Amino acid sequence: MSLLERIKGELNKITVLRSLKFRMFLIIMTVGLICCLVMRFGIIQSYFNRAVEVRTGDVQNQIKILADHLITYNYLQDPTSEVVNAELNMLSNLYDGRVLIINNSFKVIKDTYNVSQGKTIISEEVIRCFKGESISNYDDNNNYIEMTVPITITLNDTPQVIGVILTSVSADSIMTNQEILDRQAILIAIVLLIIVFAVAVAIPRVAMQPFDKVTNAINQVKAGFTDEKIVAEDYTELEHIVDAFNQLLARMKVLDDSRQEFVSNVSHELKTPLTSVKVLADSLNTQENVPVELYKEFMSDIVDEIDRENKIINDLLSLVKLDKAAADLNIESVDINKLMESIFKRLMPLAKEQGIDLIFESQRPVTAEVDEVKLSLAITNLIENGIKYNKKDGWVKVILDADHQFFTFEVSDSGIGISEEEQKHIFERFYRVDKSHSREIGGTGLGLAITRSTILMHRGSIKVTSVLEEGTTFTVKLPLSYIQ
Ligand code: ADP
Image 1 (cartoon, helix red, strand yellow):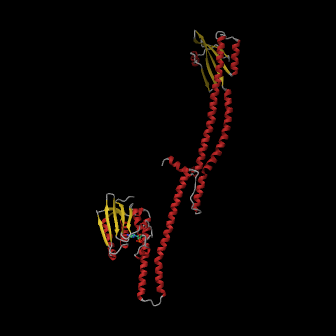
Image 2 (cartoon, protein in one colour):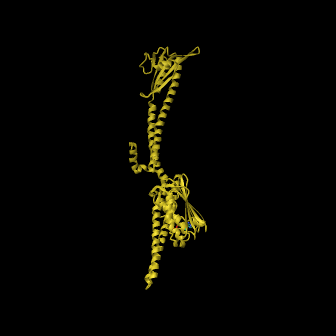
Image 3 (cartoon, rainbow, N blue to C red):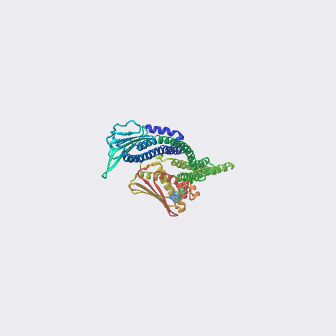
């Protein structure tokens, strides 16, 4: 396991982190925080850029006017003009800055700070400016806006740069405004964050309410207070979950009903032979001087009833075993022809006793992966039924066939047949078409249920066709290789 997965695993153990409410809260808070930060820094920065731009534009205009005056008063040749000097001082006071006038020999002829007068300045900006370019940039170390503007005259229609005005203007006032704005932005951000926090707490609560409602409803069902369908119409996703739950509930109800019906059937079936035994024993007990013959007859009836009880219990046990997982199947490669022959051998005495002909027809040798014991019981049930529900001098015929994937066997008889309505029910547990007749011949109503379960566990199918008074055919189809 990687470190990341381990950390994820540890975090998952902290239940609050897995809560959807908490995650929604986190998302809203994060988005809110990002918005506040963007607002604060984004707006402040764009205010600052805009303010510098406006200030640069203002100063540049003033300097252009000044440049015109410098030409008018021929200041570059004679820097004594009172008017221009006054204008220069006013400009440097107004913008809290410094103005330098440089002539075409790169010499400073005027510095409002009176520091660089007479000096020569050959900076990159000045050279570029002599080529006609106006340059401005913001020096964020010293908080100054620096500008270089050419003084241009037009001679014979060609502009000619005769000097340069170099200005640096303080951006302190912009900085101060920015600080005031920043304080206000922090205040607004705090208020906004408080609002976002309230929203982040409230929204998940409201959004999760339908889930809480559904959980409560499920708890009510779990506690057994109600088995009503749960309704949730708030979200489509929740509706899907609730639909699935309702279907599960309905299925469980069906299962519960069938379990109850099965239990009541079982108790009834088990009680019947016991009641007979009690009646027989009581009548023997209450009679004085019972003749030995009657005594023997009753005792043999009692033994029959006990045998019946035993058969029901055995059939029930087979069914319960089949209800367990398919993993219980003991799959092996079985020679189906041989299996059929051994079943026929076992059932031959019963068939003879009833005067029924048993016929086995095999189209080809068949070997398949099956649970021999369980399949043998299923086939026996079908053939036994054919013998039991037959007519005098009747027959039961089994035809075995196979293709490359499946093998089939048909068990047909010349018996009493089953009506179409009854055919729908014969595979149900304890279902018997004619209860008293079936009882008489020792049926429990479980044989076909056992057969069907076995076939289904082998991933096969069973079908019945029948005509009343003519006979019945059960067709079974099973895969040659066991499908997990
Ligand atoms: P049972 O132990 O009563 O034979 P089954 O589950 O084997 O129980 O069969 C259910 C019912 O289906 C039987 O009671 C019988 O009425 C009917 N049945 C089954 N097989 C046949 C058949 N071959 N011919 C006519 N009826 C049949």
